[in-house]
Amino acid sequence: MYDSFNRRINYLRISVTDRCNLRCLYCMPAEGVPSLRHQDILTFDEIVEVAKAAVKLGVDKMRLTGGEPLVRKGIVDLVKMISRIDGIKDLSMTTNGTFLETYAQPLADAGLQRVNISLDTINPEKYSEITRLGDIRQVFRGIEAARKAGLLPIKINCVVKNNSFEPDALQVKAFAEKENLGVRFIREMNLETGDFGVVQGGEGGNCKMCNRLRLTANGKIKPCLFSDLEFDVRQYGPEIALKMALENKPEAGLMNTVNGFSNIGG
Image (cartoon, rainbow, N blue to C red; front, top):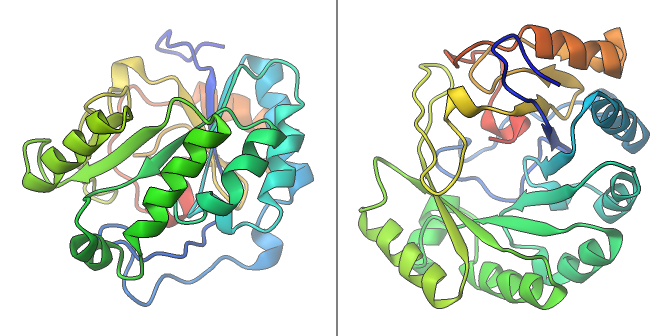
């Protein structure tokens, strides 16, 4: 399917939860953010309905995000349900990696193909400072578990203040090269001010090439990360909500004052 600017839209990012086990400095305050009510979160069946409608319209690539997707109870079952949809060529997940040691093999067995793992530093003390709650050793074990499970290629998502020449970024790059991992550098963004940049090593942030729609954990289809526009799948139905988002997808992102990274998936 194509939007009004003749961009082929074939990618749906699905936020399965607004909850996370970490409290990263650039994502949320130390005390966390108010959680969505249980009844507001889409059920697995509802998510699958949206995924099927998206495939019907031309989507063949899907990524599960959060919050942290691995804190969603039954996440392996959801992966299995989505992987069985005919027409999906690429099913991936973005995770902080802290639970991958436990979940990597079950996720692979369920049909997940690959993972992106968030890692902004390889210094244990700095990692604990950035995430407030994290133990970097869990991430390292998660990377190895993902490798053994065949969730390849593994890509590292590294958030930087300004560029990839910062000390932590250079260390992450060296680590990734040593471990034969891909790496993407993502400049720290601000939804409310519309501050974002093109992802180094990826396609995110390049509005001219944008090929994605987003499904929030509470069932809103968003045409753009940096836009207040959203269309409720419970109100309109999945197919109509997707079409409305497609028709209203802006040429470029501006700002987003109604979402946070914790519930839209970055």
